[in-house]
Image 1: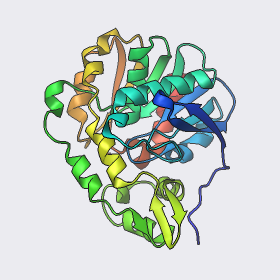
Image 2: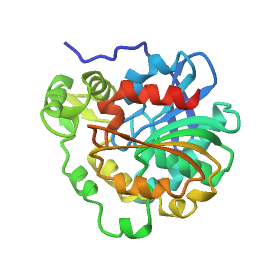
Image 3: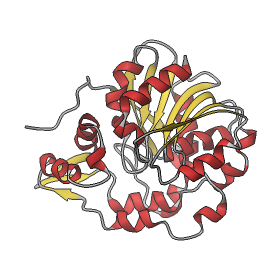
Image 4: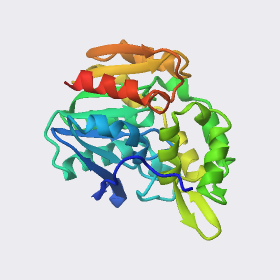
Length: 283
């Protein structure tokens, strides 16, 4: 049986990102003001599927695929994956969709960093935000080679079927800790059909270049200048918790939460809890 999402298919919208890169945006609909959901490296906008039904009761929900991911464009050079460009993509998406100033946004990991880049580049783009384990820190934290880039280049990209891919992911960390419906969404929308099977939409070499552009060190130096109301979330077992604690001391207005029993993949492991945090904070 094919792995399928448990919510209705959203509409597709295409925005023009930095340098003309097409950015695919999933328009889930919903009642209320617009809410932008920005995913972590290596996934895609549909990773938010399990959270959307609850969020769409209060917001009109949009979720872009970051450049190189999902159904967005895939430029070919490492320089094309600088996170400042992904921040500009987020700005362009908000503009193309007609978001009001001081809009709502939620981001996880790199997605949280991209939101901060967008606000750094164009103050007033966002106002009240939920940032989940942002990858933002001082320069000294990113001087060595990123080990995740090396791991990504060794990643298996091709599978005979989605069922084979899902079984592989479910058998080992970190995805074995993801809630099953989140893993279903990742597999269904993170692979494309090819002759002889399926292949990752964000292949290892692309993901590696994204990791190599990480850090947002320039944004870290200016976090105190961002006029945001921030719910900053990390977790008990996050491997970037120390960075998030440094961020907490720099934001102007921040509420800080530590989720027990979770790793860096907080929305994937505890989507219901994260949806509740989002609704409470943005209310």
